[in-house]
Length: 95
Image 1 (cartoon, rainbow, N blue to C red):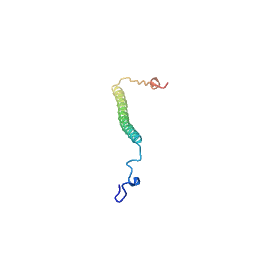
Image 2: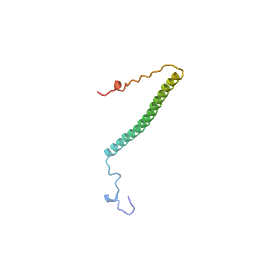
Image 3: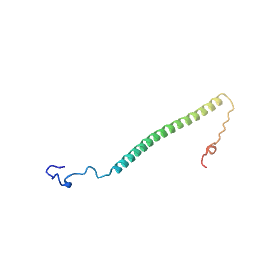
Image 4: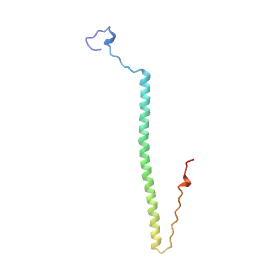
């Protein structure tokens, strides 16, 4: 209460809160859910980048190994052949 206002007049008192208790609880629950969602999104995005970098590294390493083996075989005078199979459709999981 501000100084100089009457103690008996209700309008002299400032309300503690205009928001009901249920709204406050709901607000906290929503805040916790949003925070969890944002944290999960950040973690999953970081994992996606990490896994993507790892997959790219593995593919590049495999290609370099095949090219290196082919070049070593050709340099050694061996007959070389390369058979490539497209297995992408074999692992298609769409129903």
